[in-house]
Length: 379
Image 1 (tube, rainbow, N blue to C red):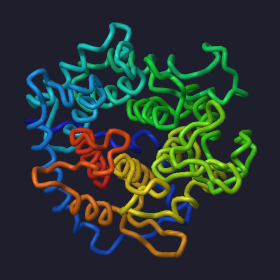
Image 2: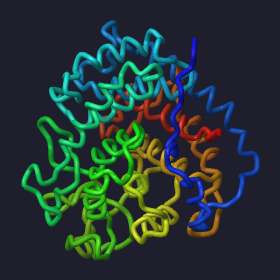
Image 3: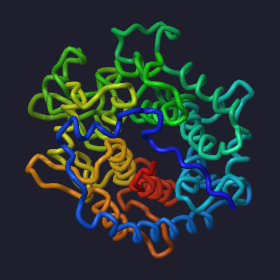
Image 4: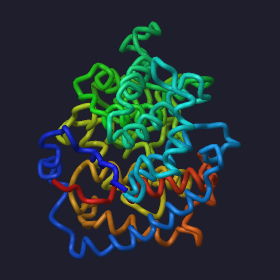
């Protein structure tokens, strides 16, 4: 069986691998950097078997949640695992199920969380598109995501905190950073350039999600924390899952959103010399961890792992130097952290069940996606 072509996060971004050298944050090649690979591959193999065992006869994972996005994440994880291609029966059944939601014009508008489901399904169809069969579907889904972005179509101007963001869609459409970053990741991975208006509008929203007192964020809470980290949304007065700072009324940053925010800033064309990217990186240097999601503890840990891995992979170096000057082999650290948390059947599940992380299907997909992002890019 032919393995799927694996698109890396830095394809079509000439010179992006030099970001680390420009920033001075990433250094050298880690000693023993290949040591965790066998462990990572063994973890992925067990996790793949677990996901195979959990698909129902209709090709669905977690059907009781009535959320096709979980199936899309599972399919994407299987394809990125390197252990299943588009014709693999499990993958093919999952893709066929997702296709039942797709409208001729593209996207999954009838899904409960239409934007989220479209974004993660777009990633799945892209990974499976080795023969071009999904070209039209991919194009249509790109346009759907762009259309659902809050902008002038909805009467929003750049002065509005909604502007440039994306929400879940369907019943819940307030824009937030998580859905915005999933949409931007899907657009980036499918070849939409950073110069596209969708990215440039999103940059306005992303900047307002950051605790940074600068010309880019006009929200009153931005200057109160001012640590460079990110919150969940600036809409409706601003919300952080990490809660308010009782001392000054600011909104606390947390690391999963900061990794997602930094990744999205780079997708939108910023370099690490931009003050927004520089400040986000400074926050992450102060809060390096694979034992928790800094700011939230164990909540959202596996979402954090996949954001952590994708972002550090995007930045393109083997070691991450924290604010104390300690250099971390982030791939080895992450692989070890996931190894000690993997269940006997290959599953991952978060005992702290926030953000649906009590669902082993969702969390195991996150684990595979995180480990897939630790693979070194080849020419």
